Amino acid sequence: MIDFHIPFETFSDWFEKAKESEPNDPNAMNLATCTPDGKPSSRMVLLKDFDQRGFVFYTNLESRKGNELALNQHVALNFHWKSLRKQVRVEGVAESVTDEEADAYYQSRARGSRIGAWASAQSRPMEGMFVLERRVAEFTAKFNIGEIPRPDHWSGFRVVPQTIEFWSDGKFRLHERIVYHRDGEAWTTERLFPWVKYERYNARTNDHQRRRVRAAGHPGWRFDAGGRDCIGYRRIDSDCDEVRRVDHDG
Ligand SMILES: Cc1cc2nc3c(=O)[nH]c(=O)nc-3n(C[C@H](O)[C@H](O)[C@H](O)COP(=O)(O)O)c2cc1C
Image (tube, rainbow, N blue to C red; front, side):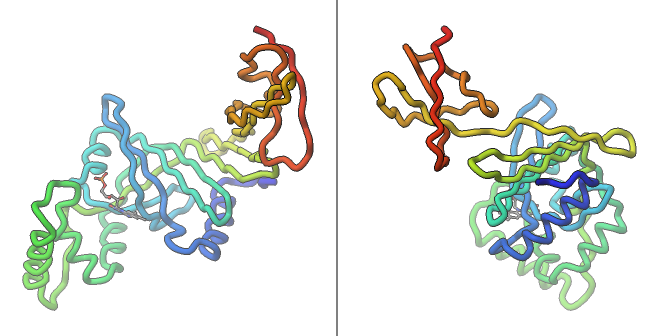
């Protein structure tokens, strides 16, 4: 069961577990942005910091996401830790981090990564890898052994969450979903029905059609009961022989 305490503590608990069990990049998260006219795009980025204020990532401000964020700050994040069978969904607004924060993180990066931030015109067309290699060589020579300042086009965003959903894989796919909604300084919580997989079962002919039906909720036996005669639904992944009959209700 998911504990009902403040969402960042739950996130922190799960993230610490993910660090132990994920083979790589436990801090990888999907970031979805949207153009002002509602066309979405998504990509993976790395979570570099988080606290009560939100979730921080860094990027090139002239990239596709950077351009979309300049016009529409509403974003969604998604963490999926396969080893834990857990998902965290975040929706909120991306605010720029301060220059001091961005400088501090930039200077903590490896020298090669700092040069890469200068060399890569992220998301713009590139003739071939040789162009990137040439630019890396140029900036390596330019900065030589001196300081590498943070480029103006490179900084970070803090996603300030309005909602955070914790999804946990459950027995027989009875997944647990708890959503936190920001309410001023506090959070309200609610449970949501999970997604459940069903197998369609024709009770009259005893013919397992093996068709998977997505039922929006549990038990949801009557969902999509659009076939002829008696149609039952049997839960997939279930050891128990749980078959129920429902009358076709038109
Ligand atoms: C695991 C993983 C982590 C990544 N982390 C970042 C990141 O922290 N920042 C970033 O700008 N791109 C990161 N990328 C690359 C992005 O997915 C993407 O290719 C790039 O940012 C350009 O996206 P855009 O054209 O939508 O702006 C990462 C990719 C992967 C697969």
